[in-house]
Structures are given as structure tokens and as C-alpha cells.
Length: 129
Image 1 (tube, rainbow, N blue to C red):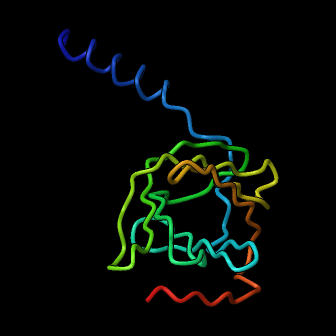
Image 2 (spheres, rainbow, N blue to C red):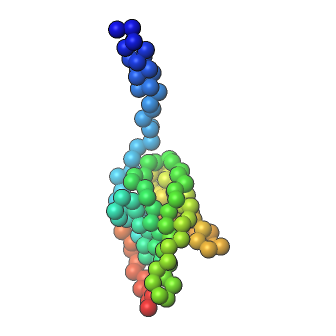
Image 3 (tube, rainbow, N blue to C red):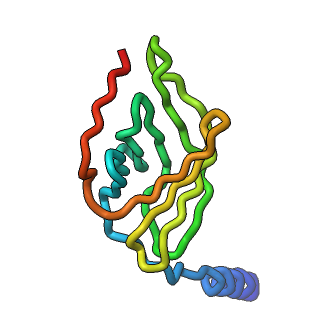
């Protein structure tokens, strides 16, 4: 019985140290900005609508008032198919949960997208043949 007490105390201490996030999950499935659309795909989100390119972000949920740096994949058309590039994307959700800002650098150009809830309002055709 004496051996079990330390184990019980450790379990209680560990359970008490786990803190649930106070930031609520934002219940938006699709975000957009002009032609761009950020929507669920697989186990994360895909930012599409860019001409001949897209960004895959492995985030399962957005929490209001948070900023996360996530290893992501930027895919761009080369003329012979799509080439993947690993990028670091910064995903910032506003305190109110009504805006998502995504910043990443593909090549040498830093890119920032400011998205709001809802589907894309524009259709911008691109020809990647």
C-alpha cells in the first residue's frame, strides 16, 4: 500500500497541472479573401484560389486569440506539374475569432493573407498548362 501512495500523488499532481485552453475553438469551416479560400482538407486546411499554387496547413482547429507557427507545404505549378516546398506559416486568429491572418514566405517574397469567415466571393481563373 505504501508503494501505491507515491504513484497516486504523482498522478494527481500531473492531472492538476494539465490546463485546458481558455481560448474557444472558432466554429468556422471555410475562410476567404477575394479569390482565396481556406477550407478543410484531409487532416488540416488547404489555402487555394492562388494562381497555380496552394498551401497545405496541418491545423485541425482555430482558437480565438492565438498565434501558431506551423510547418506547411506550398505547392506551385512548374509547367511540368506541381512542386512542393516546405514553408513555415504563421497563423494568427483574432481575439474575436472573426479573422485569420496567414503569413509565409515561398521563394523570397513574404506573403500575407487576411481571411474572414465564409466562402470565396470571387472566381479567378488561372491557366497552368
